[in-house]
Length: 244
Image (tube, rainbow, N blue to C red; front, top):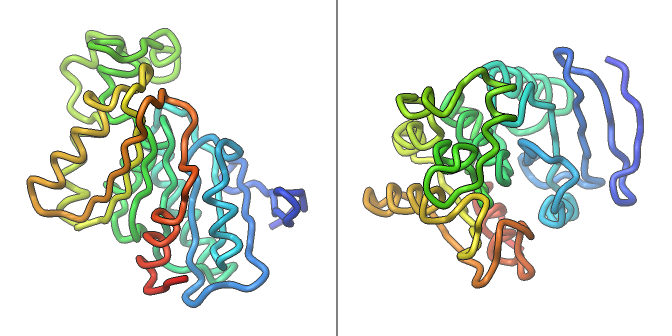
């Protein structure tokens, strides 16, 4: 494997090709117990404050490119093989925390549903969970069907009878009792909370499952993340039996 070194906010980052896809890995100077790690499931550079917080606490941060931001089944198997590689090559934990923002949220849910044994918990931030809402534009969501159709071949009519939306995979998350930290804006016009995040929150709470939620007042789709990230940091640490 050939690694190129690059800069990640003053830290060393390894860039390389894995399964024909662009991959990135940032390792902490001093790994935390158990070698915990995050996988950013889309938009690697966007709103990365939480990832940098966790690197400072001994977490690694990894990324492997998706075939499309709207998901292809091969994206899931690539992440699984990538996880196995990182365990063997760098000693990372057998379970990671997907960081899924917007379309990265749908990628995180599909990955976790397909390979739950790879997952410690999911951090979902304004996630796309209902494809009729976004990209479909049915209801209050944002329509980007031209792009979606170009990447997936599915039309809006196809989506109306589709039975593999991210929300159709909630049962697999629940069956494996995967913890979730959900952050959404209450004024999101792109991926509306009521049509997306709230569906997951209600599904989990109705079943007594572990979900933590923060709703940001007067917040649209952006910015992702939190100004006060302590609750999110503590949640991630706790999944690996750690604390500040």
